[in-house]
Image (cartoon, rainbow, N blue to C red; front, side, top):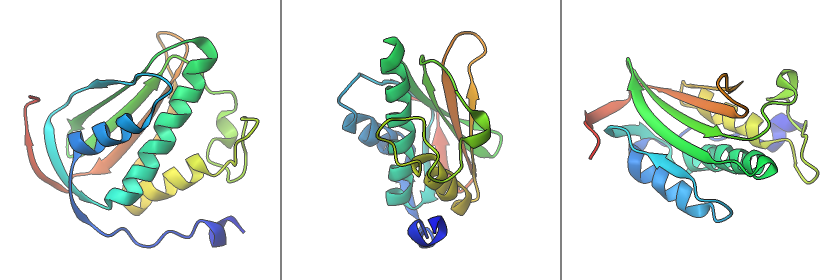
Length: 159
């Protein structure tokens, strides 16, 4: 039933400026100020609407976690080899149940639907990328790491 519910259309690839995409999504979050750590000026070919949904889910999850501990949230991007890597980092309690992270309809939130991370992973994979979540090593919290292949049109040093 999840497949029927969340059947994504194929991505409609268009030029997407990474910095503008990240800032647009971060500006939607009103509960806490998300720190944006600028990376290189990069443009990729991707479905902006789908990537918006993916990043909104990651930022909302990070803010939900950080508000439990009065922690912070940051987002950064960089080119790692031939991949764009976007990292959303929070200072929340960390991952409670890694085995069920991407299981549709599984949630640890009282009002959660359990489809946000499953849908986000599906979007990443539709763009031939990966989405991983891992506990931070240096302190409590989580890192959501999105890697997208080099559909790179241009890159330059951060401004």
